[in-house]
Image (cartoon, rainbow, N blue to C red; front, top):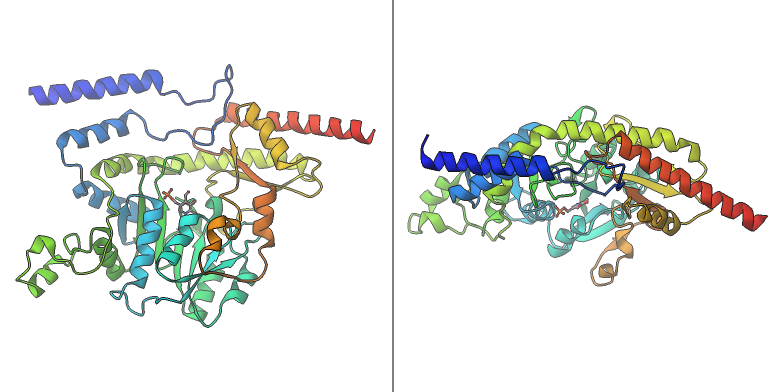
Length: 434
Ligand SMILES: Cc1ncc(COP(=O)(O)O)c(C=O)c1O
């Protein structure tokens, strides 16, 4: 073995040693804590990242291409275009659908329906491309677009639906695809919370024109930051590849076509379209290649945790409303969301403060009704019908951990803490009503 290989082996062994010794994110009954997220990467991923950096081939290249194909195959789609975040994947897909390279592309002033219960960067790419977001309420059972309100929101200017599979629960894809067919709409799936989720046995992100995923730290698997757009449409893929990097043709499969068309321009710098720089790095892809095979196992644990929470907490049905898995859907539980019913004699603030004091992290369900956020005062949008349920989610909802690392001891700590809170709340109420 040469010196270089020996040195590499030593580095890897040290990293593995370090991780074996200090990477312990499991539940510790001595110091109980249940954080919203825990790292999904271990020594192998860190080593792959380091080896990639040491190779000095760090900017987007072969590893990104290989990971794109690996992910697209996992997701049952032909193509994948990786970018540096889920937000960038959302941006890239909208930019491509607006671009003149796309047949019958979206145009300034066209309306795109979005769920009010979504994320900022589900919506901003629409605003950034002079499209008009039309905010539609969610259904209080599955938390996804309310199908009746959705149909009513479709008007003469509606050209697309940008749906979200909220918290990992697949939308009723049959109903939405039927609407899309009837009204000739593009479907963009924001799957940033729903990696690995399925509808009728098929992965989300494979139904619409394009599906976007996030590999941020808090998601089902992570490449540190990262995202991917998947599609079966070759032309859309090529456009996304071009827009992702400056607008040059270099990463397009049909690059040679442009080289032949413009022989007078240096083939490395043919700007064939407008563009951004939304590229991921080889380091992100190297991590992703090792993370993806772990995804299904992580999802199994999330589903087991959610099943336990639902079963155990069902005794509090008078106080808690839970998200219901869509019929034909496989939910992947980005977190565990809960809504307080009107009959609950306590507030979200009270229960989350109690949990927080006992080191159980909580958060709002996504960020509630996006239309209530201050940024919306600045940009043109339309609110279709009432947003009552999204408001309820915002005012009465909270979520806690359901990730790959939540084991049985952690689950029991969470539900026993909730038992403790409710016991105290009911005792206080009894004293007051006395
Ligand atoms: C629905 C939705 N879309 C987009 C994003 C953005 O993903 P990223 O953080 O990778 O930019 C998120 C983030 O969690 C999300 O929940």
